Image 1: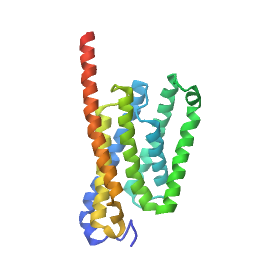
Image 2: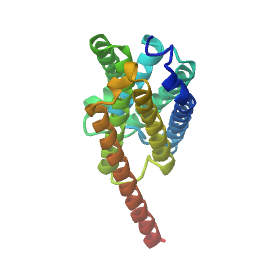
Image 3: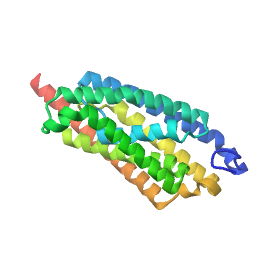
Image 4: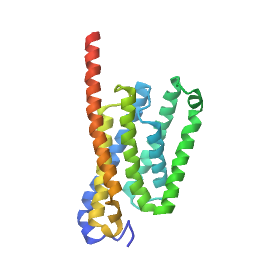
Length: 237
């Protein structure tokens, strides 16, 4: 029995729930990426921080092209994510170069820096897979990439001090997509512990707990900033 076939009876009983969670995560993230593309070209600003974007694309590349997981639904969604993410990378670099940055070196070489950063993250996932195994890299690494994006998006919101380049739709789809996937992982850990019990560990619980905290904090700050911006518009009118 491996980690992707010959399901035990305990997991077979909840497998339909798991499939719904995977489909929910896939659809929510796909919608999130499409909305992100629209936001980038509408507001002419990066919607996703470059660090988390590179980490996320590297994970998708690793899953789709390097360590293909034998689960068709998951592979289809990952392939679609990767394609849309290429547009996000293009848009993010394009709008970033339209604005003058404090570091002219970074500003000038951004089209080179981003691909190198993605390759660096891919090599990190590859090294991790050689160290701890493919399933742990794909699923544990995916949770970590999601956590990095949550923290990075909150930092970007605080650094900008405005809702420019963000939206409630982006936040909601990211939250629903992330936690549908994480709940699915914990479901496997509980009902298929022989292969997936490793996921229910202190690090994964910490990542999940911290991500929930950051996402709630993000929503509160985003709402506050939105209210302040509306009030400012009212005063100008």
